[in-house]
Every structure is written in structure tokens, then in C-alpha cells.
Image (cartoon, rainbow, N blue to C red; front, side, top):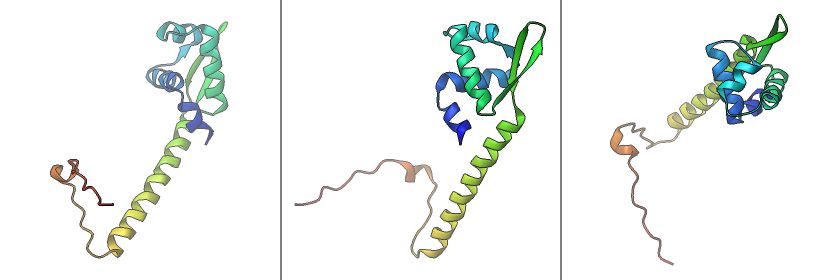
Length: 118
């Protein structure tokens, strides 16, 4: 999924988070991040190609905003992964005897490993 690849870059993820708060121009985004305007433009181009942002003309500048359809598609994909993982977990836990799910805080502590004899 192209949108996941686009969001793998921490700067692009931060740009999307910033645009989710409020639409902004390249100049405004360049002021928010320690990168140049051309670098912001490149990131926005990749985000636009991935379907995560869109732009509208505002006089002589372009204002970028998060594209709801792109975010919805990403969420649907992640929801599908979650449903599949939950279904597999349920299937395994219902079909393997002796498996007890323990979500207590004590069960999450690291346990010492036993050394195997050679």
C-alpha cells in the first residue's frame, strides 16, 4: 500500500499530522519543520501521489490539506489487518487445549530464561 510507504518517512508523517490539525501552504510547512521549501514540496508531492493529501488554489499559492478518502482507505486496510489477526488469535485460543490467556500485569514481566545444557 503506497500510503503506508509514504508515511514510513518521519517527516512525511509529521507533515500529515500537521495538516490534519490545519491546512497549510508549503511556506507555512517549511517554517514548522527544519527542512527547505523544495524538500517540503517533494514530500507533499509523494503524499499527494499516495492519495493522503490534496491541494486547493488560494490566490498564487497552494494550500494543502489531508484527503479524507486517503485516510479512510488507510484505516480500512489497518482495520482489515486487525480483524484478521483477532480472528486468528480467537481460532488458536479456542482450538489449542491448555492455553490460558493471562493479561495481568504480572504476566507481562520478563521471565528469566533457563540455560540449556549442551
